[in-house]
Image 1 (cartoon, rainbow, N blue to C red):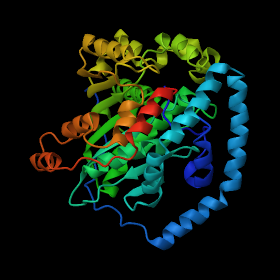
Image 2: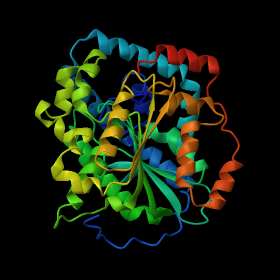
Image 3: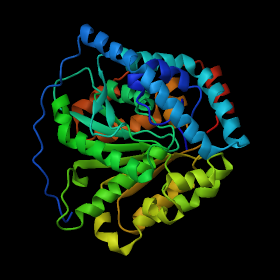
Image 4: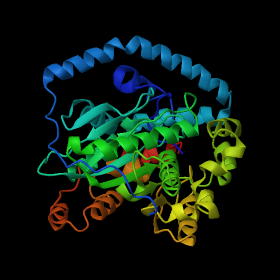
Length: 417
């Protein structure tokens, strides 16, 4: 349901890194015609040190304005949440959880702000959060496969930098990652989020070659709330394509596969569950634009509609990952969606991880270092058919541990997720 560490919504933290650090402790085919894909070009050179200094000067210059924006939106969000012991206790637990994992977070943050392989805040649209981060492999010997990633955050505290650890992991395995940001509640509701993500995917499909990505090998991935939003964006795009005359800026045929990590796909089944965990019914329904809109934003329900059956057959292969001990979004959510997809003839696969929680797969396991079962699967899937890439993967050294095991176990005990 959420992705740590969290910030208040609707603020571009790349324009205010100091504020980002503080707030992280306080919040949680019928139609296949599309433009000719551009041929891959060499990625842009790494930015020079003077440019980096200019970037940080710009950050400081925007700090006052962003502080005002955060304060205003914080009070607006608090009006929705009210005074409730559930979300307040989880907020305290989130702070403790983040402190225990801080050794790893600091090392990841250093990579995010100082690595020449990271392009922060590439603008893809005209809305406040319409930006994405690019994680580029060091090896630029040819076009790279691309993962367009949408992070979670309970539709309230999502932020593109939460995908930094994933971006670093995949970039080390010669896969480019584009972490797409989107408006959070209360600045936007679910339709705004889906629209933003769809526009971000469009940017990746049409522009990634300029950064060294391969427009013929694009994969879509979402985590938690990001899995739900990206699934909605993908299905909505398929529905548009199934209707003659719709003008499209991107096509589902450009997406090789969809990876859904710990997602929720039937909102009716989650309202009461979220309420019991502190995301109160009134707030959740406000995010989802009322109870009458739940079917429209529930992919599991949407694909069962006979009127969109032709759209279902346009969908790429869908692979769902979930931990069996996930208390934020039960693994039954992914199982039901996979069953529904198979029931209407779509290609779907469900991979369950015994004993894993909502954040184990996305945070604790990567911070633990060594071999990562989920990442290894995704990399092997993307590199399937590329013998040279698979040979390199087989020789890749285990990743370094970023957080001591004792702190990881303590964090798991007090995790609010």
